[in-house]
Image (cartoon, rainbow, N blue to C red; front, side):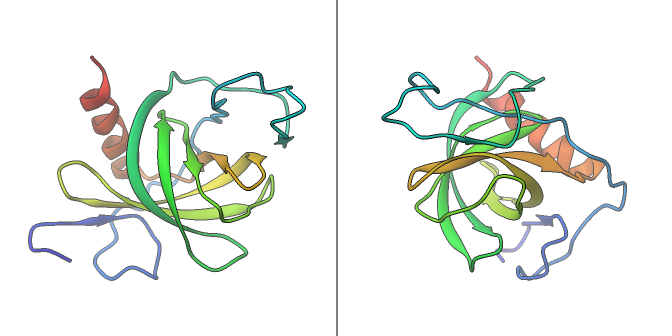
Amino acid sequence: MVSGQRLLGRDSSWHGSFIGTDARWGEPDLPWVGGDPTSSNRPIIMMSQERRKAFRLPVVLEALWDGSASGWEARITDISSGGCYLDTVGQATPGETVSLRFRLPEGNLLAVQGLVSYVHPHTGFAVAFAQLTSEQQSAIDGLLGQLQP
């Protein structure tokens, strides 16, 4: 870890200090990624019907994720206060708990957990953040503030 950077979260596979104990559930976020979600050429596996409560913003952030399978690289392509969408070839299943790690624009690493909301097989999946600490939520809210025009 570069001097001055902090790691926010509870993921023990990353070295550094983990911050916060004020755990609470994040709001569900089920972002659609382009096109008609009912199109037969874009299979979608849904955990439940859409319940998005927060506006999502486009972003490009490199990320790593772990679930029931070993670690995978991904790109976060949109994010909100309640969740994000990951472009990845790694496969996840709806309802699976995953750990995400990504670097914020100012250089801090953010580690969060979430539940897979829906899956586009071989393309990516949506995650609803879960058990965010107040510091993790503040980091995400700060990122959203930077992304808004």
